[in-house]
Image (cartoon, rainbow, N blue to C red; front, side, top):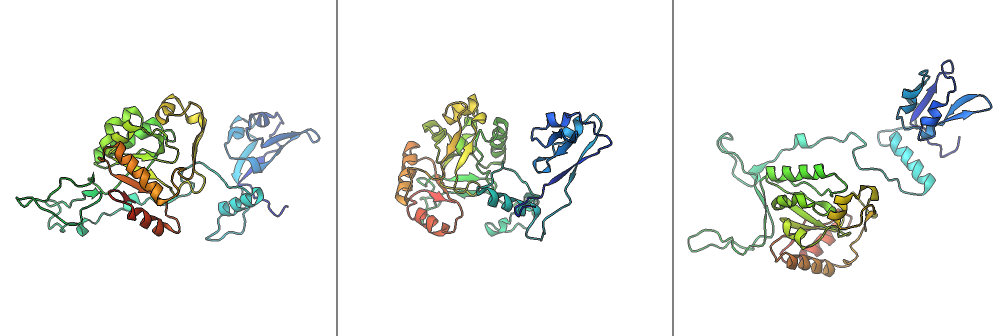
Length: 335
C-alpha cells in the first residue's frame, strides 16, 4: 500500500455465484469502475473510481452487484473526519486545489428557525405585544451629524443622502443570474418586494423582466463588470461595489460557457457559450483613491440618487481596509 493511499469511500461487492461476466456493468459505467479480466474470465472493480450512482446495480441482469459504504477508515478524531483527511491526501498528491460545486456537503445547522430579533434595543418595549407591536423597520445610509428641525418643529429630511428602508433588518445576499436560474432570481425578487427588504443581483446583471422589482433590488458592480450599464444602475435602489467575498478567495469566479444561454448572454453582455471569468481583483482599483473614483463615477451615472455600498471580505487586515474606505466615504457606506 502506498503512503498516500486514499481509502475508497465505497466497496463494490460482486457475487461470483451470480455474475455471468456479461460486461453490462463495464459498458454502462461512466467512471470505468468495472473491467473484464480476459485471463481469469471474470469482472474486476476499481473502487477508487466509484461514486455510488447505482447504475451498475440497477442494470445488472443477475443482481450480482452491491455498493456498500467502505468500513475501512483512517484514524479519526473529533477534529479530523474521513473526508478532511482524504482531501488533504488528494491535495498533497496533486499539488493543486480541490474545486467543487457550491452547496452544503455537511449537515450545517439551520440558524434561521432560531433567529430572534430583539427590537427593544431600538424602541421602547411594548407593554402588550398584541396591541403594541415592536417595529423592526431599519434605515441604511449616511446620517446627518446633528438633527435639524423645520419651523413647525418637524425633523428636516430634505437633502439627506439616499437611504434604504427595510421593514425587516434582513437582506438577501448576492446570487448572480446565470449561476442561478431565471426562476430562482424571480423568487428572490418577489420575496424581497413582499417582505419590504432587498435582494442583490450579484455580478450577473439584471434580466429585463426583473426591472419592475428595482425598488427592492441592489445592483452589483463586480470585477467582471457583467451587465453593467446606465439603465441597470438607475434601476436598482442601491449600488454595491464588490471588492471581495469569502466564497471565492483569491481565484475569482468562473461561470462555464454551457450556462451562458441566449438570455444570460444578453443580460451579462457577453457572447453566448463563452466562459464568464470574474477576476479576483478589480483591475482598475489598486488604491483607496481608485475606489473613490469608481464611487463617484457611479454616483454621477445615477445623478447622486443611489447609495453606493462597498463589500469587502473579512480578511486579516479588514480593519485597516474598512478604515480607509470610511475615510473616503463622503456619502457612501461599507458593510
